[in-house]
Amino acid sequence: IVRDTCPGAEEVISYGMPAFNLDGHYLIYFGGYKNHVSIYPAPRGSDQFKKELSSYKGGKGTVQFPLNEPLPSELIVKIIKYLIKENKARQK
Image: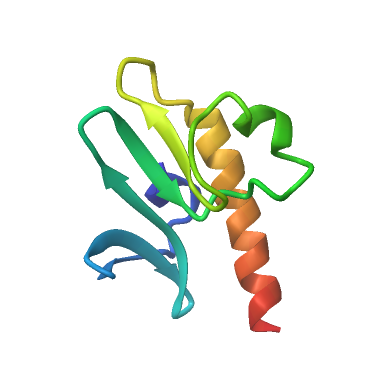
């Protein structure tokens, strides 16, 4: 999903986790666990995502997608696009 949404992102390992960087800055991390898949950072503080992310567990900057449910691809694409915009804004 990350490669399709952001073809210029570079696959890396950072903090011992698989991640993608964009233009030399981290974009998104992910990890697989016994009962869920997590992505970091999750825009939980953004009004745009509060409702959509409220049904998923996770901390302040994470979201956990349970393995017993289909991966919400459309939501993940929205999160990645949001993070791309945030990444570009940080670089300015």
